[in-house]
Image (cartoon, rainbow, N blue to C red):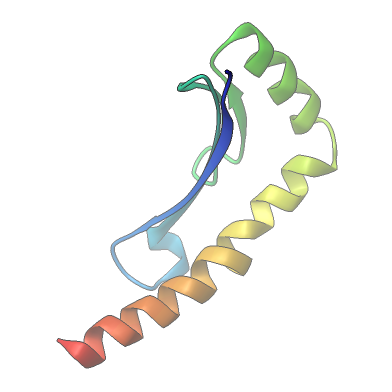
Length: 89
């Protein structure tokens, strides 16, 4: 069978918004074909199919919604994680 999955990731070295990178990668059969990165600010395609999707998503509402995820998803959760980790160390 074929496998499709999405990996969403927040990488950080402090709880400051500038030190957080949000990525969302799309895979098909273990091959990443398109990714959104907050440091790039748009989707980047890695295969023929991914390039077509990236072009379409970068010209539509998808890219605007994805740009907001760094603050909405990562910033909120990084604050919770760092506070929890610091109180237990």
